[in-house]
Figure 1 (cartoon, helix red, strand yellow):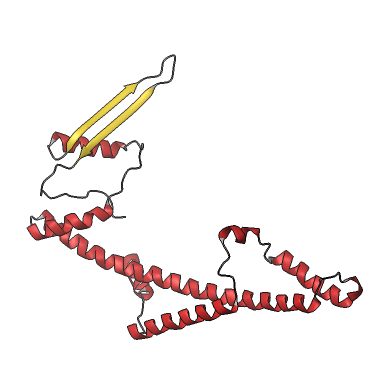
Figure 2 (figure 1 turned 90 degrees about the horizontal axis):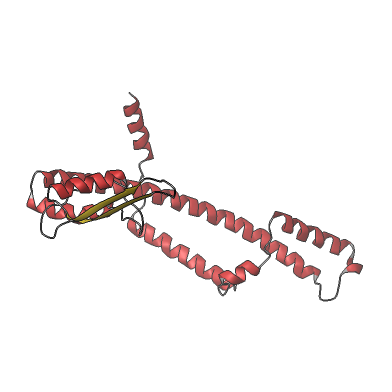
Length: 224
């Protein structure tokens, strides 16, 4: 019963394509035009990461300070120092408010696109896995073409070991069986020294690899 309910929920989450490819290209074109227009409005494209770290910005507290200062400088203009421009400060405040609202809209758009990317990516991966599992089954049954396709696809499910990383027990046992049955070339060395007066030592060297040839390679790890 729970499986049926989960399937129904999954169906509800499946993406619904309501736009054509031409419409999507139009959206991309409109978005790029918007980016170009705002780039011409705000001359900030030269701002590097180093320059960004030097800027103070206008967080909640700083914005409150700026806003209060603008009010007080208007109420007590006699304290305005040289090179201080009240109108310029007010203009900056209006720009900040506008940019904050604009950023909120852009963030909402980014969230929408991110969700769509996640859902569509999940659907595409499910379909690709369906093909992969079908080819894997046919390859196990000895179909030559399926074996060739499977060997090309299974490389995406292999997790390379980081340099200096010791293999897991399961990996050593798997490689040991492969060596015993002639399915791999290489060597496995296990060295162990129990601690006595000094620290002990436990070293595992697993230097195995597939033999060269056109034989089928079966991936036993979980799909990732």
